[in-house]
Length: 423
Image 1: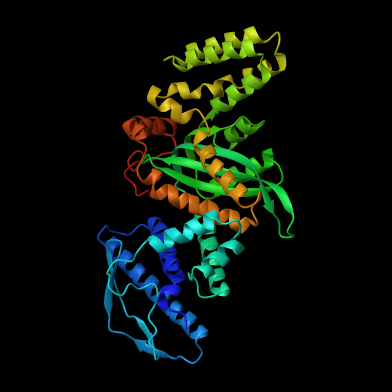
Image 2: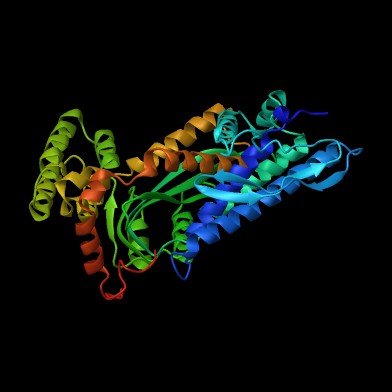
């Protein structure tokens, strides 16, 4: 018979379920704030009861000679700050649920964190299963597969959840990844990572979508339409890389939004297209105009720079002339916010972590499911650490950004309810 110390995967399963319930709860709007504690307590009670019942079912499948034997007297367990009452399921041979601490009233978090690290660091989920079994952290391969199925469902639900209509800024970065298809062939796919800053100043991952093939305008269209279909309506500022046709696409889908092109990519492209001497001049002029307080003066200075470069770089200069306004949008925001709004560094930083996961997996993800789960686990880490609180600089200017948002979309908003409605 397996000991309780060898059967800890239901612990992580329960905490994953709690997290999913909390995310779902955030989308609910009770009729009164006094109803929220009761709603939370009732939901967690139901979750815990279901998890305990499932664990006894696992046990009985593993031990056919044992039989269910009712429930122990009611007991209270604290999940976070919420007390939850439950009845412990019993069997005739003394079964005790592994996910219940015998001498504590708080449900530990360590098992979930350990499971996440094993899944993130493994070469594949098959390797993760072997690690879990070697450590005694699962009942059987089938039960571990049930846990992965649960994680996959949570990831799908999260990345397709309904979105709030209003956002201060949305950043999109597209990255090519290598991925196995259903026929076990490694193929190229494009991964769209969409990150938003809400009206509360907090960062959120809005989407992690994968399309087979290379980056195309049609895949951009699908990614953006998916955001609209999920409820995203008004965005003060879009921040993307320069992709042919994208500015027109955004203007068609979100006509009142501003569009900032990534200035980090601009400097990289300048270094690739220009001679060393011209690049030094370009970088120095760009540094000067980035510090100006007048967007109009910056645009004049930038166009003058392009004229100097035209004789030896005609095609590239003509390309930039059509996009000058989009490269300088960040100058209309407060100086301390400009570094946060002029590049796609934010989603690129997360995509770089995804790239590390791809390398650790042997150069490619072994399935769409594996890629999606690992992206969700990375997201969970961000929410628990760096993104637990809003960016201080965003909060400093939040009232000004909110006013600008309201002015930009005042024809579409109800002034009586804006910023007073339940978001």
